[in-house]
View: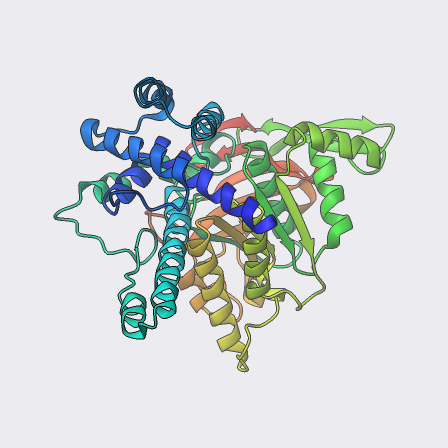
Length: 460
């Protein structure tokens, strides 16, 4: 059955994390009981080895798990089926690519389900003995196991929470940018963050979102891309195909950036394509980039029909298949359906951005979106925090808002200047601009980068 297959995948994922992730192992070790927490013999056996190893050596066994298996098998003469299950698991063991916090949430839900099911079975046994008082006592005594979000933390007693807070691996970027633009984004394109681009219309917001999706895929990350009614499935796929093939949709001569002059002007060369991109080349080029893996899931909706709740339900459905998004992109927030139960327009904006932030925390993923700037932004040389449209609380809910500054002159040259409008966890200066030049015909807005402190162009 599909449910049983999903349960098996969840068990293997949790045990693999216990064997390879120090944070997961230490947190579960603090709750471990004699006999284990799984409803699966081989899982309790292997997890128990890992936890004992951690308690003795302060580390996870990882691939050393095979040595523990060999030692156990040589001493205990185990049942054949149990030994085969353990050996098969160890043979396929590899470090989990999911965030520790996600695995802990998953483990918490699974272990609590096991506890509740066990208690129900025990209560039913008492009822069959005509002992309802004992059955009731069993049910009301169920305690909840807290591992992930909402778990109690005692900083004076638990050093592992400090290790987790200072573990840079948990804050590795999910996508990378060329040159000093990578420094500009440092610490932003990570799990649990909500990041948005802000610009007037026709300034490249969708192009930057597609660029982010492509960079994440190229970095072997899973991307859920929700097209909310601005571009449509055809438009998204054509741009991704152009980016993968590095070829425009139509034949012609296009300007490709090769650098910047000393005074900061973009330098280009003309490239002529005798043929445009077709469906076969686009498909094959994309498969080369993703290596045939299911890394991108695209879901397109008419304007004002997709809500955050609907997207969350889809992400949960995919999670049950074993497909967990690292990056979730909404193109774009302003044209999503209003949250259920809200009437006032400003309240709708506030609640929607809260829901986007919650989604990034619930799924421990990076959420990227975009929003329109105000009418006043058309006359601004640099976007600032007062150029928001709708309600300014959206600036409070994001971890960062990035301005896409595009003058009429630069728009014709495919040049964008980026600045931080707000940023939560790092110092920033609204006046600090990073200039990038791209070729939108091949859906790449960032090929060359020029920063204010480094006049030498850097290739992306």
